[in-house]
Image (cartoon, rainbow, N blue to C red; front, side):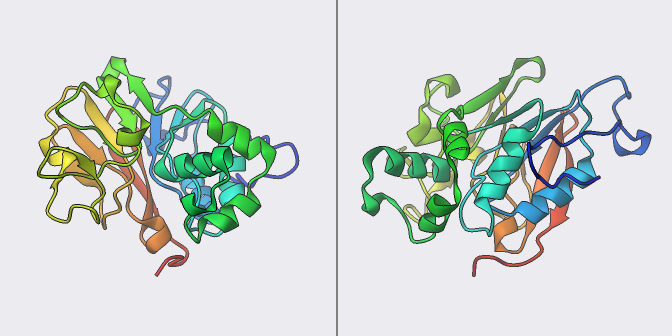
Length: 245
């Protein structure tokens, strides 16, 4: 199945093949996809492998953009897909901060290529991204980065949920580079709800009793990963290249 985006962006989904899921064929799937980071070719591969049906729901965990070769292609494809929501990632949030303030100090070096690629439709799509996606029927919440266990998840804003990786000695949300001795928030999250997230790249999915991390470093030469809910079945495709050293 070819998901390449051309013209008016109208990909057509095929039916469920009987072999690809344990769910009965009349049931739709919830497909959650980890950080794409401009890896357009790999996203096409993953969608071909997943073969989403028209009733399936797709949830992208944010960081569609930056570092990889085709941020515009990824955003254009994602916004064209039916029954799809994308969450706010820290990379989208930073670009929006620049878009608002026009302060070049906000951007990292690789952001500039993304700013040149994105068109007005892309920007409009990005500015409306939600922070979380609640799936109460399966007691699951999707988010880009994660949550502080000390605060109810629904009270945490973008500055926390798009950026947290670890918790420092003072209980503050931090990136791994900011607090190398920090404790992974997912190791301390006791739920409910169950949390599916991206943001923190690892060689493999990060499974904990109450969370599942899906960033497997596609842009670093790893894999682009999806989880099919509620079974939490993992589907992956390998990166075509290592785009970031």
